[in-house]
Image (cartoon, rainbow, N blue to C red; front, side, top):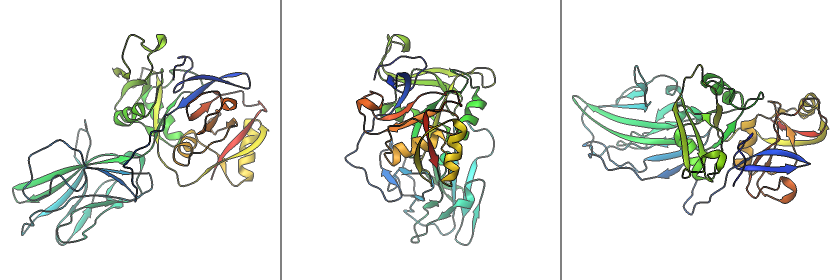
Length: 357
């Protein structure tokens, strides 16, 4: 997946209809132990001191769900005290201020708190069950959650990780490379149906094949870029990995963005034609739809294995197309990915339209 660093996408550059195009490529890896209900479970976690009242480790220490789904974060009592409360909290690394409590419950009452509380409830499958049900998952819900049993001056807790399944995509301004402050990058991802990726999401994407030679903001305010194939313009003297510039000035420094998105409730489809940008928008509206966002196209490519060998306008004014079955006449790149033709002149009458409804 070698490639040039200018103007950059995941893995390299290829030619479509005589144009040099960027290509965003993620290698799809398969797993021999992948199973779904509404969530996927993993049980690896470092050993810690065993709680007295709670079963630790719980049935699973990592729960994986997609945006919009419902998951259960497990927490089981080993011993049931006469008087106790259960408190669920979302742990926020680096957070200053009150902890992010989701709910506090005793035998008689349940009180929700904050952004997550209205979507949370206790499962109570039996008398020893303090598991948390979280509905309508959102992109920002991923992270670590603590189940705490409070018994007078004693308390026990176990920690469960919730991972939102999705895809990381690099995003660049229409005006060119390295134009976003941190706040502008955050807004740009939001406008494309995403959120700034976490380091863990970027690292997972790198392990799955993300190779991108432009530095971008991530959620913790640091600037990173993932490299699989070191090359002269991308630190050829260094080993593959996540390269970091560390924390940067969020108001002054400017880079690209690494965005993260998950499955959507709608669908993406292609309308064939030779449209200008304005005409593409009208073509989608005739289908009771609107031009797709970049994140929506990536979600369709990643989750629905969407494959369409035609460049089409998106709502941000870029032209892209998703490839799951690489072939020579579709960019000439051997990896699956979302190819980008950049931001053409909006009066150009060459491309079709990717619509979303």
